[in-house]
Length: 455
Ligand SMILES: [Ca+2]
Image 1 (tube, helix red, strand yellow):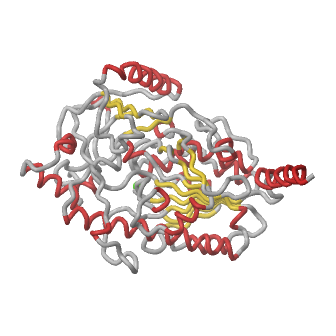
Image 2 (cartoon, rainbow, N blue to C red):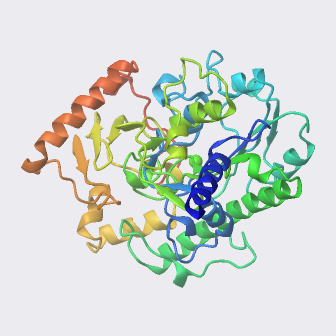
Image 3 (cartoon, helix red, strand yellow):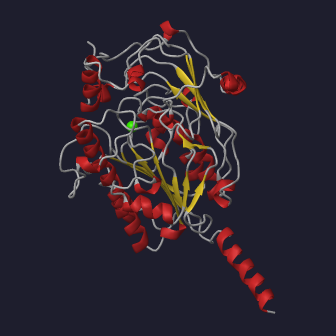
């Protein structure tokens, strides 16, 4: 008898987790600006102060194989909000405005009765603004100043979708971003940078802005709790591109395109779970529409992650894809990521792997240049400055997260390389992506040594 009751209880508990409440769910996407996937407590960093992201991961699902479609601000945002790959949005290069004919996934949400708002950083250009009910630009030192107001002043008789985009931890950095700043001694220097006092100071100031982004998330959570809508609100935390340092932002390696991806949505997502399933930020639109019960338009190129949210072991895609197009400097690279490997194809290997101009002007890059000239830069890091770069790179990314060991010449992995090159080419033809020729690529806009704008 006791056994029977046990099964009844299990059944009821299962229903409680899988059934949605009567109210349509709300959605908030928090987007950091230039934050690395691993730079928060939720992903194991011992010293960065990110209590709110850590809480969301404890009370929700953290993805360990989530990828951006590029490591560049505006193209990444245009891609997420249209649910399309950068080359398919008409805004694949930095600062290009999203063309008028591109639909954001906010449109079907609006039609289904949702209130849609964006607050903080925008960077999608003027045409897409009419596809949100409300846009509040800027606000506060980190772009978080309007977030709580938007939640307070929203129409209370409609479900809502909010795009809360921070300007943290984007450069430039100043001391005093948070009350209790990180000390250089607390910095964990990734193996892609030299460990010097200047580099530690640069990274500590970056940590401070990651914490300020986190504090903005905390204020919104507090307001949702006050309004008693926290549990019916799907919360997602991501970044738009890698950290603003050499070998990270703009690159299609792991440091460039892996993103934190933390979901809290207790009615459908278990607590404290990690999913290894491969997912892409192009999937965010389809997922939100699916959870809202809204038909996913054919223009979206991603897949709904709802099956993964219900069961973290479900596979919804075999590969993720990423692009490197013009971002301050001429470039054309494509990457394909499988559960185990990341392959990069570079159509312009004669160009140096210069980081974006803001990172060229950074203390960390200055230090790397100084050590290079003194012949003291670690051998593995010298490739940042050498040309030609490899046309094909292959990394076993799960064990080589910094992509330092190119396996392309490994004969035992020949079949892996061939397979991934074939799949990459298939994706390109399916999504109408083709290399236009080096001469057709937008030329450098900045000096590659000084990071100053070219006249
Ligand atoms: Ca950015």
